Length: 364
Image (cartoon, rainbow, N blue to C red):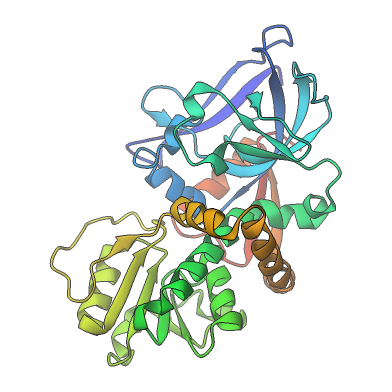
């Protein structure tokens, strides 16, 4: 391959895809302090569909430029520096962070330290700092082999789970005695369920899912009850309840509000894997609200001080890993056909929750 290949999707119709290729820049053509990074491995989950659906609203589309009318879905993954104009970074270094669905990325390295750097490119400013940060992981065993796969697949998702758990606990669950999670088979949902189940007893954890995924969700062992979507009306409505919406299904949200009425004391919107985004005004119970992870990060960084979040998250992650080893199969894909197949299956909600996909646009 002599160019940079990029997998783009239409902003108006996420099912429409386009592959573009531009020449690889030479070392001399790179901006000052820039790196040319080969993206050799990235994860793709339902969370990436949320990035696409909120591409304009939360500025995800501006991170990695694409042709007019198209966007590039951000992914978490690994890259190797194959050309460097920064004096502190050598070729061959491995980076972990936020990449485009592409074969390469030019990073304008800034704030370089022993542990990491950020991309100072103009189009990447004005977003949460976590989306511009890259960890230098060449010698870090936590980012090699299967551990690295788990990091790419779930580190960002589990950080979201960790932050939602912390937010709910700090608010004393708004008086709720149980927490209901939609898309209970999703990786963010079962990460949150694991935290609630192990740390927040006697809070009861209920998972909503499809009939097809019910056995998998039950096998995780972190839900007290698993309920198919068509049976949500069977849940006792007298219990003060918090709802964490991972799916963004307006019809499901309305059904839960009308079922629990004033006993629905929290209705938080986390993800949007479901493409029916119709809003329903005047719902009973508490008004639905968005949970924005960077706000909780800023709050806790100030309160817990330097390293406070990392220390607490690291302990939670170490406790979560054994669950992944028994419940998640890593599936690798190589080349455009594999990438498009996984993208379309995830977009259609047909990806197996038992699988974690690690992809590359390079052919095997």
